[in-house]
Length: 122
Image 1: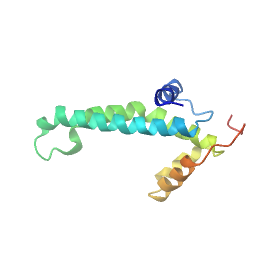
Image 2: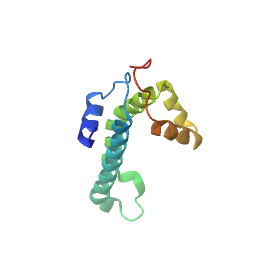
Image 3: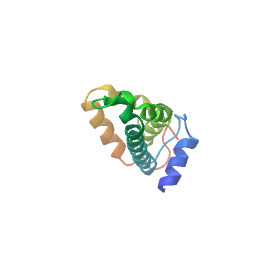
């Protein structure tokens, strides 16, 4: 799966929480999110930074906030589908709310190979 195939797959399943997402689809999406957030922050700094003056902080990041909100649902959906690929319930994504440990557990699961063949999620 290529970068563009993975991104188009995630957008075609914008709010689909059923099914499975293979590792390449998930990790290409993570790279896409990183690039989008970096670019929007740079554009925000260029456009809105001078208006806020020195020490303006993150108050002038409207494009980053809008991009985050627009990509929140597909981000959650691909994470849930990735968990389905390894045979876990999508509700396990909530473990990410546990500081540090939750992130590390999810990261470990996200790098695991998917189950070959069919499982209860597809």
